Length: 243
Image (cartoon, rainbow, N blue to C red; front, side):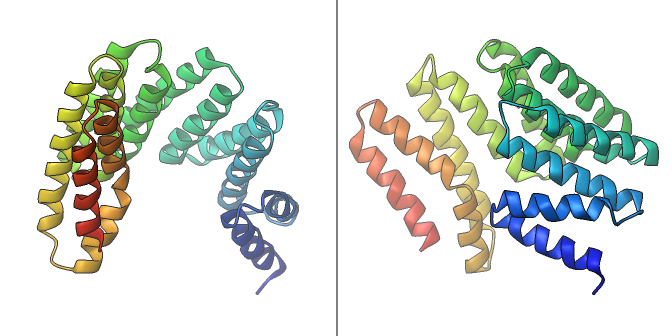
């Protein structure tokens, strides 16, 4: 194994373990030792994420490396990764308080994803924008989440579909908890119908675990509207699938 490969392996492991300072040191060392532009862009992206985690109120370093990743991917013509770079930059800007520019970056990401016809990346961009505008513009957020639901159904992406459902429920809940409860229970029924079609028990359990947040939300709303029995039943439903 070469020195670069060894550094990357160590950095990636530390990154996964959230040992960000250690992984940052090794990623920075890789930059000085590698010439491959694709690899450099990948490392730039990871460095930007680490700085974002470590310095949310001081975005300069995170933005610097995010922009370097964007510039490299643009140069290489890797448009799908350009979209992810724009989403990354938007996230950094949002956390630093620059909501206006964050939305501009997400609009650029959405348009780029549409231009290249990449629905999977488009869903990420749409969901990201919906999450940002939800507090100030409910109608726009609902439209974005509804678009995510439609497109995710078209391509069979259940993760983004149910994430969008959760987003809509959160918005509706602010004005009508009973309606939100009906919506989340309908989503759970749809999920359970889907899970029932999976033969492998472990796959069913893993899938149910990955969508446990739907049950958590349903249980929380049930408690909020005073239906303790329903909240308990919801918990039992999840336990039955995952046990």
